[in-house]
Image (cartoon, rainbow, N blue to C red; front, side, top):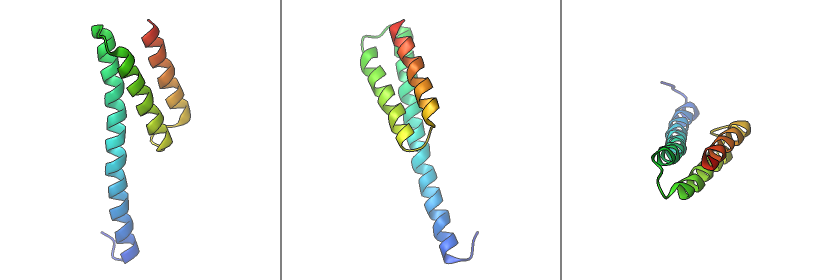
Length: 84
């Protein structure tokens, strides 16, 4: 544990950011999984879940949780799955 006050504050800030990032990443992954499960099950609301998943991907990208290429790749794969 750090002794210097600014280092103690950085530890607190980093832990807070880590919790926030983990929650947002979890939300993104959950949205994608919900869409994929609904598509496999043949549910009626796949279009809405697709839109939510794309939105979650864009949000994760804008927060810096995933890189732009990964966001594009994930969106492309989901779009391909929606069409099939």
